[in-house]
Amino acid sequence: MYDFFKPLLFKMDPENAHSLVEYSLRALNAILPGALSFLAYKYIVDNEILKQNLLGLEFANPVGLAGGFDKNATMIRPLSALGFGFLEFGTFTPLAQEGNEKPRLFRLVKEESIQNAMGFNNQGADVISKRMTQNYPFVLPLGANIGKNKLTSNENALNDYFTLLRSFKDLCDYFIINISSPNTKNLRDLQNEEFLGALLKEAKEITTKPILIKIAPDMEFKDALSFCEGAIEKGASGFIIANTSTDYTLLNNNRTFGGISGKLITQKSGEFFHALSKELFGRTLLIASGGIDSAEVAYDRIKKGASLVQIFTAMIFKGPSLVRDINEGLIELLRKDGFLHISEAIGVELK
Image (tube, rainbow, N blue to C red; front, side):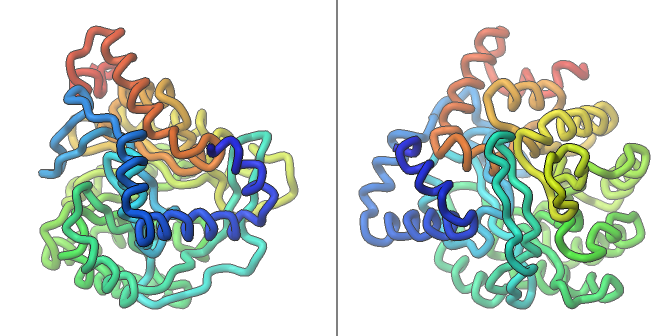
């Protein structure tokens, strides 16, 4: 079915297409709840070999949805029917904001990639928190991906994160601190040990929920490693490696802004993940993100130390069945290698 609708969606402006998908999923939930049961029957893979307890949470499978797809937590229930093991909502900010000027989202069809300069467009914490009171607790682990407002200076950025931690500490299962998006001016400057140390110190006073840090794949390795090791010492529960890339040498266009996601960064993100996992594996939770579009790529990251993986862009090009296909493919790959459970494969290349 997606193969039929995909050409029509790709003729639309990317943001309008996303809005149409969001509207359709919400309509299914509101008008035809039985359709969600059909989707769940079609897409959910239920197998003990994939189930894990991490961070005190039960993950039915290792494939999650990365932040950015469901910014305003409007699609949580229908998305769960697509077979994900966990979901993120956001990135959102304390105050509603429109994000950057349009056009700001571009499909790179031949490359199966996306270039975006969205800028944390979202409806704001008040609206999203009211919505989450109707959805939480939930059958899947839910992560709140939080960021600072565009107009908040870096000097005052801590207050934005503290506000969101307080507002959502009872409305999610874990937090993701987003200080690595390239689309909010100077945000990546907050990827330093001083800022993160101050944030984590106060965060531990605000909430007992796990706090994950999402980092950029464009950091120098030594800086990224020092940053992660400092975060572990200050109480971070894990890392999402990594966000979109600003390596514009990967592109064949003249747009030198925004972040690149999808197949174009598969190798870059994989190498960056592997380099860090060799130093961090066994000390913290590692989630791989960036260019994951198949069971084979997901399995490679798992063997290199990822307990969980996230997808986003690949689903735009391959459709919602991708979640099921990755999970089914992982089961086959695990069994082929003689593993009885996914935990046996995690980090096997590092042991």
